[in-house]
Image (cartoon, rainbow, N blue to C red):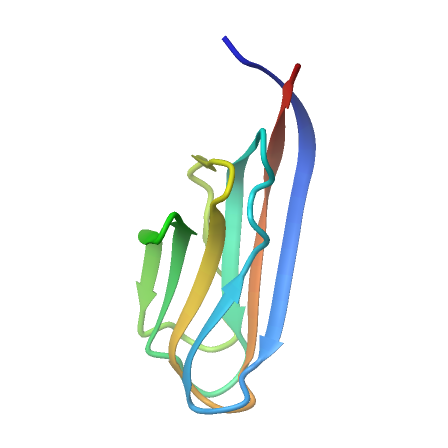
Length: 118
């Protein structure tokens, strides 16, 4: 059985939309011999409107959704604290659907990086 050491994981991504479109905020890939246990995530946008916010896991050509908020209100923090793990080579995506130009988009998550020992 693999043994892992735990290290704090904190991430914050911020982008200003430069057009009326869908925008993705994308984390780095989980490094080799590691996995991430995400314990809390949150998204928000500051102005205008957005059709939906989705948080997805990407990797190996596939994406799957963790959570979605349809018709979100501006300047409201949408969060989830149900832990999940993603493996090496995967990444997290916060997708803002139908957002407007100059909207400030924010994606936070925290948890634990598990590093395989040996």
